[in-house]
Image (cartoon, rainbow, N blue to C red; front, side):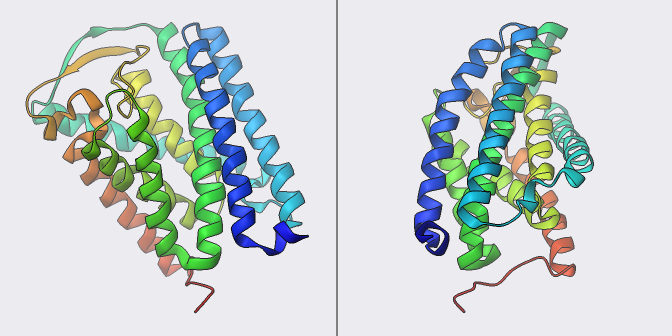
Length: 275
């Protein structure tokens, strides 16, 4: 099969398919998230469609078991990732609050929090399938782990320039703190469940718990708490959201360092195949 033997064609085909899927399903999940029931149903359904399509297409194109989505690692990977993501973003908000970069203004609602969880389930799953399952994995196959981290991180940050309150600084922050972190999680786990869980935990904590704007999205559906950025944008993140804070970058880089160090010790960092 030509697509199986051609890395470039395989990468292009899968990128187009999963980018189109994200463009189609993410707005649908966003509209559904205004109600907690539809938010969960549409969010989980969107994630399920993405996972089903990924397994079928990769199995067909590459004629191999799709080990990066093995059921045996699903529960542990998702739960571990969710815990790491929640912990890291709580650390980010704690640092911002201590530096007087965020002011809590009150409480939101549990219904909003549930709706956000459904939305972020869809977003985390679809984005990880695209950026780590397709882009990172196939680039690493040819160019090695370092190149894959750089390419997937920059493109991951770059797509966030499409958001209403996007800034170049915010996109670079996302590339470093999230692109690097999620890529590192994939390198260590060698499955997609850990980065999906980590992505979900981070995003859910940001919008579902703290009620903050996510990645320059321009607004938030609401969460368990409400608050506003305060002081210099370099500390608070400004209108882009806390992810544009230098403190978020610090947390993301430190966590990435420990993930990659562990992965290197275990021999999981790959060199370029063309060498």
